Image 1 (spheres, rainbow, N blue to C red):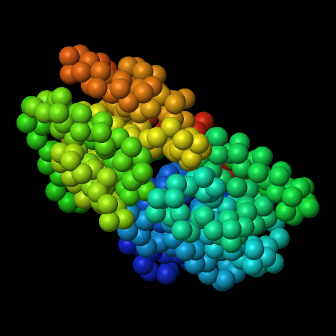
Image 2 (image 1 turned 90 degrees about the vertical axis):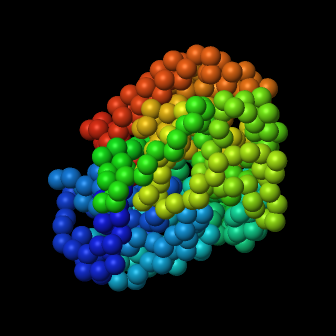
Image 3 (image 1 turned 180 degrees about the vertical axis):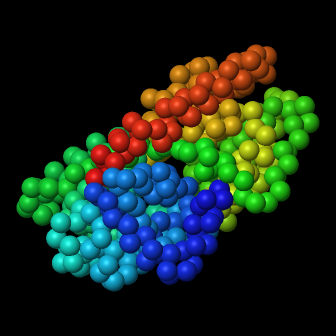
Length: 394
């Protein structure tokens, strides 16, 4: 993603930040410290590029440091008043840091500004094995996040069921914790994708496609965040190895099963590719030469209120269909079996579905092509989607 890479390099010069504030429009949106991660690509960076027009100006404070495995970072907001005078909307990323003092300082600079606090997942329901459980499972951290939500103007999520849950939670907190009616509004941000940005040439040689060697390539894209989910499918992966030894190649990108001194994929034969930054992610994904992207998620309330549909978008760009549990939202609302992807209702169905794919490869091709058309038409930054996104942010 050359455009994102160039932006990160440009923001190493502080003057690039100041240049943004020289432009004004009817509404100005200021994102604080978006990270170079998958979540922030959809929640902040792509909107930053794509909704800047004659009626809306966009700015960011900096591009935050990151590693491919991290999805959470501290918020470092400069107390320089200029961006807060300029902004009509300030968007703050998900953090466990107490933000009420920052809210007060921002509002003292600009009493009309709208403060938007982002929530990325259902922190109330995290697995004990989740890499961030130690941060979010404490009452102190949860209380700080509740304060951050309740006293913001808007809370922004990207899962509609989480939207519903937090809307109810704000009412309950108003009665039980704050003795105030909530004025904060919870909204769900649609994830949109721009193929010209995410698949743009990086200025390097193209990554060669991995050879198929006559095998059907099933990919799993994950980080250690999904260790518990992947562990729950370990026996399924072993069964795939055993039944389709010479016909199917499992490909893991980003996570090799080793986490917390345990190997959740012990005994599974697979091809592994190390995680990359989001800048190189799409080129790497394309180079894997996948036939199917498998999304191994347990049917849990946490997943149903935390998952996004970004993997369907990403695979769809390369005409690769996904396979996922039919009960997992939001995929359950997007995917129709054998039309634009594949669904299983129980783990025992997975082997049968793969068998059918190997016999009827045209189904896989057609599902990938349908997903591509939907992603590039219905989830692009077209005029109607941009207006919808503006309405949620503004």
